[in-house]
Amino acid sequence: MDPTSERAARAQTIFRAGNEALARAAGSRDDAIPFICECADELCLARVPLARDEYEEVRAHSRRFVVTLGHEGEAQTVTMRDGYAVVETDAELAADTDPRKGGSP
Image (cartoon, rainbow, N blue to C red; front, side):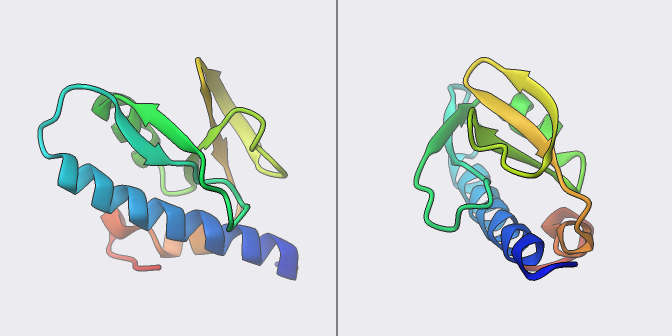
C-alpha cells in the first residue's frame, strides 16, 4: 500500500474508533447521533448525523466508512444518502482494526 493510502486508512480507522465510542455513549438514544466524518482527512471536524440503524448498517462491513458528502476522496462510493455517503476502502488495515471484529486502531 502506498503511504498516502495507508495514511488515509489510518485516519478512517481512528475516526471509526471515535464513532464507536460515541455510539456506546449514546446508549439507546432514538434521535440522530452526530457522528464524526470518517474521511481520509485527519483534520476533518465535520459531523454526520445518523440514526442508530443507519450507523449499524455501515458498521456491518469492516471496510466501510461514513463520510460527509464531498469527502469521498479516493475511496469507492458504495451509496449516497441525504447528507452523507458510505465509502469502501480496499485497505487491509480497515479490516484488521475493526473493533467489532476484535481489532484495535
